[in-house]
Amino acid sequence: MATPENWTPAARHAVAASFLGWTLDALDFFVLTFVFPDIAAQFHVTIAAVAMALTVTLAFRPVGAFIFGRLADHYGRRHIFSLNILFYSIFGFATAFAPNLAAFFVIRGLFGVAMGGIWGVGASLAFESIPSRARGFVSGLMQAGYSTGYLFAALAFGFFYAVIGWRGLFMIGALPALLLIVYIQTSVTESPGWSVSRARAATTLAVLRDHWRLALYGIILMTAFTFFSHGTQDIYPVFLQKQHGFDHATVSTIAVIYNIGAVLGGILFGSLSQRFGRRRTIITAALLALPVTALWAFSTSALLLGIGAFAMQFFVQGAWGVVPAQLNELSPPGARATFPGTVYQLGNLIASVNAILQTSLAERSGGNYAIALASVVVCAALAISVTVWLGPEAQNVAMAD
Image (cartoon, rainbow, N blue to C red; front, side):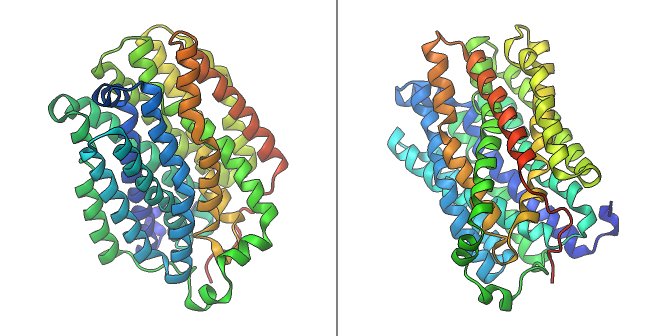
């Protein structure tokens, strides 16, 4: 593997910016998962009604993936990436000032548009800047940014919630995001995989039309992957609060523990995919999540739930740690900022019903979230394994001119 110390300065800066952009985006997204009960009480609605905000965010992400991806394919990665970060930081901050539930949904929908572009644009910037033999490690590292953002959200909830309340939590990510934009504009150079001539050679719609079978495969795969991740993440804090009655400190501690597992799993399995292949590594991680489902969902003590949650996210995000490399290597060169992000976010759109599905199932079964959690993760793990087994792989394909 090409270790970071052997990369060019441009490669190191590109990877750092992509990781941090995804981390801060995830921070703004996952803060919501800790404060469902507070928002429900604030606006006098059920938790299931508030969970619709997650669906709205996920549903609008494909719009942002296409818009910002198309702009990045046409005008370059660096400046569009900065613009994208600016937009999600504005709408993340604006969430704190929502006067009612309708306004809250509108703001989270706009945040979803901005959030949708980050993954595809950041991944193209990173993968086009690094040596091909480093892609496995960078794939795991970049996806670990999502878990790191969730980890920061858990820490913010644990340390600051009692002081600043649920509205204040949505303000925390704004300043770091603005500092990241300054870093990108002063230290990150344009991706060597992008050029004006290539941008003018083909339109994104033409590329997607010519590769519609690959796009359809990517959407199906990412639908299963989205159920796998959001089905184990989004309502887990609610499950700990409502079904087990844990206080804020305990919920925050368990969330920190399972996000550490997620970071470690993403980096480990992403790195292993460079040696054992993308498909084989994804299937292995997905299937290993099945044996820990009972411990993760049906344990009764905080200790066992913490252990189960660590193991679950280690394998869930382990499988996810291979996804950035897999999708970017499969992507057509003329649409690398648009294609992976768009198929990823269209999968998100289909799976955006997850939070409503799980909370509704729980409420209909007398507040039993465990069954809803376990059902989704088992089905998603099996769906991922079959889809990846039947699908293609393009490890180490050339990306830069």
